[in-house]
Image 1 (cartoon, one colour):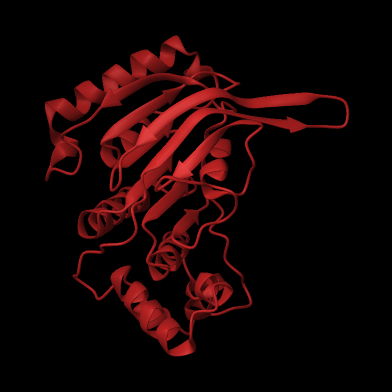
Image 2: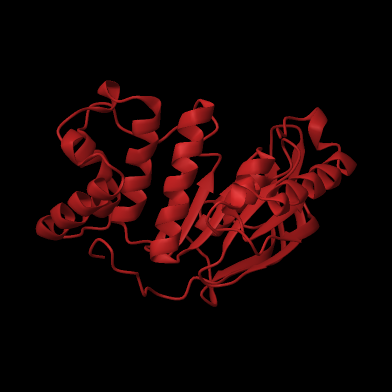
Length: 268
């Protein structure tokens, strides 16, 4: 999409129906998710939070088509997910950057995999880097960037895909508080412009409230939906400084405390 123009892409409603995922080890079986059901509307930003090891990342991988359900189904836009989808972007905590490729080449990786023509790749990458404030670093390498800039690059790669579904697995957890808040604002601004479907996995209560119009609380492993908290003020200017924001955080803290989350890594 051209800068400043909203995206009207394919429908990216997400439906997880009685989703179970288990991992088979040498001498044990780990049930990550068990009968999880969750519906996410097209264009809705949802945060997922819960105790460490409760299957949050597994849920994202199943929606991305990178992990096959043991039972149940995942649908995106009404179609069963049987593998990676062209218009789904996944942003990981470790950035997933190749240190021997330039910023521009890293931003273009997803497009190259999808065999997008070179001229189109150049256009999309240029617009994406401009959007995240990295245009002047196009010829630099990841090792020359700060942590916040590397995360911006990971976001740019997702933007270049023109994704209608953006999946984010604790993408900001390794950043300092000021950089993290800055990038939270960037993610919110991008969603305001593009109105894509977004699923954010996080251990931060405040981040979940800032970036999710609903916050899904999972139980300890195997993960199920313990509660869904509506957050209608999300996206409003100045929301972080309102009584509603603090009340929502307090409500989530109570729910997570009931699930034993604070003993396993959830932060305020």
